[in-house]
Length: 173
Image (tube, rainbow, N blue to C red):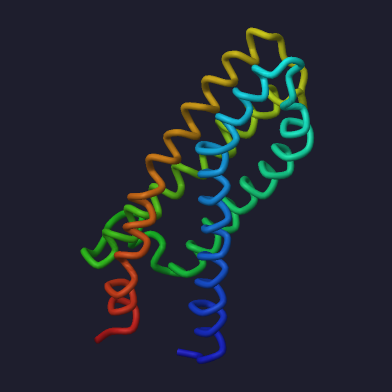
């Protein structure tokens, strides 16, 4: 193996995978454990005071949230390299943990881009929506976000648990 490529592939690639993964999961936890409750309390104020969050904080946080998800998944796939299909289709026992983690990450990425983001745009008034559409969007985004929160711990477990097994499968030993 080429030492320079190995450094980029497994060194920088893994570092970026972890960095953006921390950003993605950190923002997921922020939304679920901080912002949701804060917005409920702000809406109960007289007059309501949540506009600063919905107008300035949430759109910016959602930008970093969705792109951190993309970079995390892309870096994970880059680290797997030509072993992506081995991992995703569980072709060898060594790839089962990382394969499970990868599938959980792909499901979470789908939730971010297909369920959470389009519905958050309605909720935040970034696209036109009726009150009925906004209420439905709140429910869908909430459920997708909570699903991602529930999937995040097993996904992180399988990502970390696979490290030594995956390295041995690639490099031998």
